[in-house]
Image (cartoon, rainbow, N blue to C red; front, top):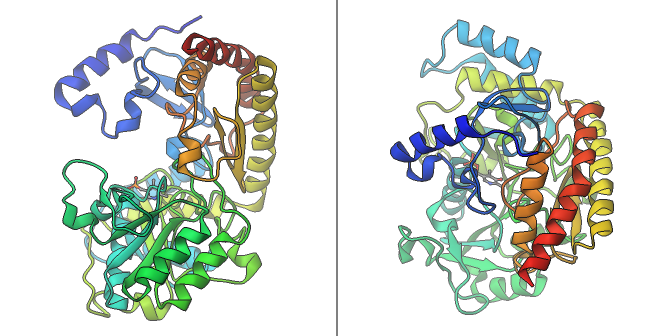
Length: 439
Ligand SMILES: *Cc1c(COP(=O)(O)O)cnc(C)c1O
């Protein structure tokens, strides 16, 4: 039975009167699935409670950050203690040093600089790559999201290895004229781009394992190939681990491929989990490269709230609690959900494929494999919308878009997972009915 949504609807109406689309980030508006976004009043563990008093198992987890679940008592206590001392000083503090040490210990980066969002992290990493190499061209992949950086909101030009065009109004052609957009997992396209423009390429930036078109794992050896191609041409390999960092595994996506295969990205960006639910992000890399940053070097970069003591305390506490047991739990819970989704969608005859990298996964409403954005775009979004709303009615809040990962946390216990499993069969039937309607 659909839950009451009067209070959310009333807030959404007020929100729309004062905020474009009623939301502060577009996907929250439910445009891709229709209906009224749920305004959340509180959250604990695996559960969200909306302003109408409905409870939902949360499969968004703030789009990744809430690795330990909501309102984790130890994270809350550490944050309360930090904020009791003051909230921002504009001077260096101890938690920044400790969080940087933790990140350096868990990842291949030797130096790290804090910023406030993943967008800022990739924007700054690209500036640093250009400053350090003295080159100007940036290579990215279609379907990879790196935040709303002008030069990366780009769509492929008319042919492979031609320069990109703006992906949104408001981005001037001059901002994307130095960006090359290639299909993901396509070695030949990368080889051609470097053959044509190699001596001008400052860096190639890629999601370490793309999660922003749904999970599209790098094919075996693809990241190693990118790292090697960059090295051969004097370009930098920028691995965006804003989503995968400290989530795909204890050491991020790099722990799943680079650490095993023996290569290291030149620069890495982080966000989401490392902020523990607060605005904190970072970029880091080789010491000699990071030395180009002000005040050590000449590449300018700064931020009033960068390394904020409350945010870095939340991130530090989260990472210290993100033990092997947490990742083992995410693996087991993910395996249970993936198997059950596959079973339910198979039983209902809904074409789909489930893909993962480490502990991260997503469900595509199309036959697989999904290797790149073009494959992902074949999804039956009407089927997903029906599935999404049936899950919501069953007390499960999925991401309101077919192009997103499904996020679990250490707090997703048997009761939460049981609620997901119970909701799946009806949602699969709703998806099947919606795709028949479309035919
Ligand atoms: C979320 C995300 C970003 C942007 O981070 P914001 O904090 O939203 O600016 C960048 N890159 C990747 C891979 C992301 O998933």
